[in-house]
Length: 158
Image 1 (cartoon, rainbow, N blue to C red):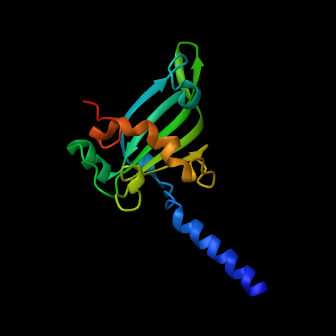
Image 2: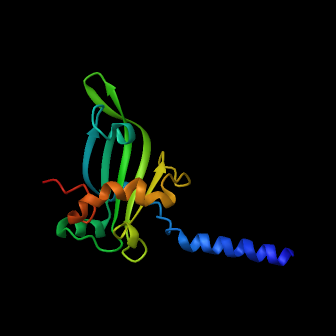
Image 3: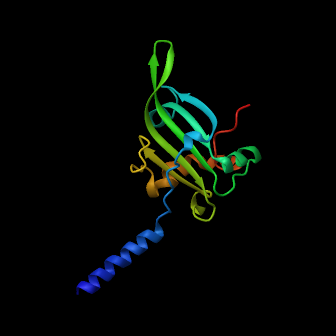
């Protein structure tokens, strides 16, 4: 009986693991990558409740190829570093890190989401994943209208 239960548990675990999207890796040293742009989402913007704050966008070398050609090759990684925006008199300064959002291009692994894997790391903590298997609804649903730009919003600035 124990062997039968153990076999059932192993079968369920294997099926769950196969059905799950592969985990998007945390991008070590991303702040040493190319800085694409920065922006601030302030109160009144439709995305303020989820993404209000200071955004810095970083791209690895492969993603830079994508920004220049409008087609991102597999291995491209784009990082969305979101920090609190603190008003200090007439200046806006960076506060605590809210989330590190990651787009990782692998057209075979992430077919269901346009070839991109999505993950968010709460507070920048690589152990605190906030997207997991909800990438299709939590991220890709918003990125889907950007298909002509390979599902990305940011562009290189002049």
